[in-house]
Length: 237
Image 1: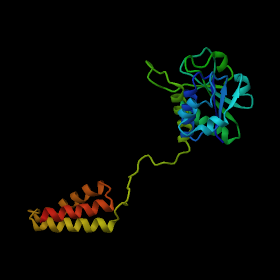
Image 2: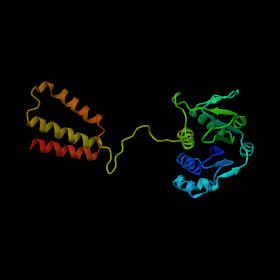
Image 3: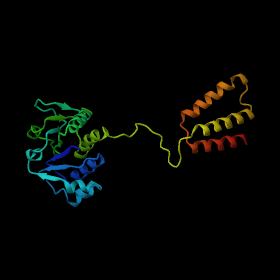
Image 4: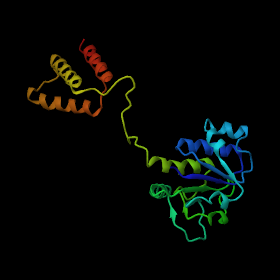
């Protein structure tokens, strides 16, 4: 269950297409259009969707905002301008968490986006239960339609995304195991011993601990270890 994204009076077919592309990036499937200026299935829209034309083909078109939100139980209006209305105002992240909680209760939600030139009118916002205002540079917070859709959609998507915040990419190899690392450290220690690196024998254990720490911080892969064995051997030769 994902929220409906409602584009109110979009002006350019290309923008509808790029909005569909942004929605598919964020695993959002249901688009609704209110009185679009151009055919959302024209060639320019399809091309701009970059493979997300499924969303365009399934999009529902309505004449008014009232009709577009009729079956929804919670509606959020995205806007960068202050409104003379008393309504809850969410950041993108706050909106995503609120939607997640409400959808868990079976509540059907929708997010509205205004025309490219003017944004939503007050009459449109009046149909919303809450406002979404994404914090940006106050001197320049204007977004195009696809940007607004992507930023809003991403906040929703990332709540269910389990990708680690950081990981080591290891194409064609794997992280080195402790046996491989111990062989490397033994090789390094033997070669350093041969070239007289340990001038003070009493300092050797501490020096090897320091070298070990350097390599362990590097998150070496099996390929890295093989490469370092070759480097050590050639340096010795």
